[in-house]
Length: 228
Image (cartoon, rainbow, N blue to C red; front, side):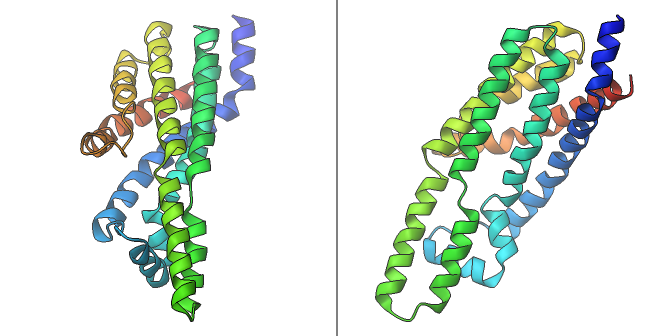
């Protein structure tokens, strides 16, 4: 018992950071949705360049700036989950943590928001049609990268990690059954990337409700663990 208390004290700061990280992710969700509804992502490269030139911040948010921040916050959350649950099933949690970190790394490999911002600025000052055509082609490549293999693989990896963690949570007795079951639902819905036609976007939007519930529940537990 004494060893367990010492270990909890060692990780109290991580639990606090993870708790605040979960709350921040929840706070970012309505902001992201509001920007998407008011300024839907353009369907063409020229549209993206025009959006960035008109409002760079909106362009960055439309191209997942807040999701980039979310991934950093999720890294804190996954690490805290590993520390909280490793005594319940160390090998499963290590597998989950590895998948989660690889998924986050893959997501960062797919991000192109600031590259698109840079291209849009070059496009704005381009003086020849040849230069503009070249920049439009470069932008098309970036968009293909943004919605390509790295994003899909990272998305699914994090979904599998979520499933593993949720099943460990279910048997650990540390987190509530509600958090465990909501996590399982979230993990299943995260196995289908948003890039999959029709159903992918349906799952992505539908997963926001269980995501918010799950984050609030684990944030509450993280603060409890930090104060024990």
